[in-house]
Length: 452
Image 1 (cartoon, helix red, strand yellow):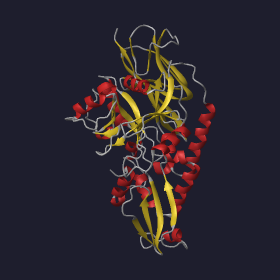
Image 2: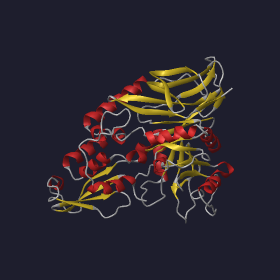
Image 3: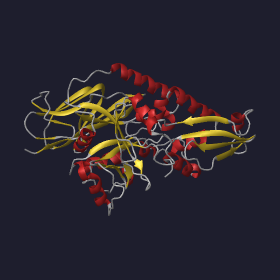
Image 4: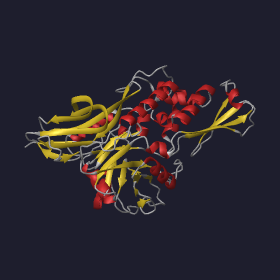
């Protein structure tokens, strides 16, 4: 399977496009192309610095340690994957990521459990797994020679002995049942790219346009993380499925980085009147653009000779991907057994860490406004007088408390206390304002309040 961005870029070559997208998602003011402009990137950068300065330690305690984890990560697993496991480890160390849950593309000749990394390496915990059969699959032991018949049989095979399994690329599977799963991806970076027609068309044209190419080069040089975040959206259909399914069974929401380190291009001189644009990883035939098609490429060629590299663009080094979105796991210890148990139990939250460090975020239930939790995110408790849901974050944002998928109260603050009035499934979102837009920052997992 080729790079998702490349596939879409090729498909868009013949599609018409409007000058400005009109279907902007929740909280958005600007299109993705508008977000790319230098003044927008600069404004987002300044707001990120402001949020960093405002950060305070959270005093409300869940009783667990907060570990930053990456699920859905690819390295050395396919021709279209451009990174190695040592590079992934180095990026984890630079971004303070504690856990990498690998998801190899299954190749029959290779065992994605026994031939992968497992255990602690320089303080980073690796757990092997696969992206297979529509899932992120993390069995406890090798299933290379195991047979299965159908989806339910595969789920049972993965969960045997305490394995974990999550529905992946949910945008393609709105009708898939989730009752037997540990959870699902509530945010996937590649899924977020699928509706970006205007941006992807702009990007394709930019590679042969001197002004746009210069804008890309400057953005990557001065605002790399802001550039990586320009497509960020709230994935409404996926969140809606999560909320619907939560009504009948627990379901842990996780983030999917889907990182490959494969989104990049090399632009070369092909002739005195032509350039070639090729993919950095798993290249197919390069795209050739002549001065007849785009006269201004003469400015790119200048006095260079055929074969000379004009520029290389690397959009998704692991460090940038890992710093973008993570699943924060609440566990006692940095061990595989504790991580697996936390994910089964829903003791986790998803965060766009690139906006602000959420470490210490707490969502829990107490009685009579005590600080001692009777349930933390992923848990459940009985409805009773004095039951209070409490939220605290290290940065003030727009807090939304949802009950059975509907917002019941919201406020802009660092904390929120809410007296529970009825049973149901409660979860929290926090949005941050950057450059006059509200962007989703934190998605908690749920607390289930059962009737007395």
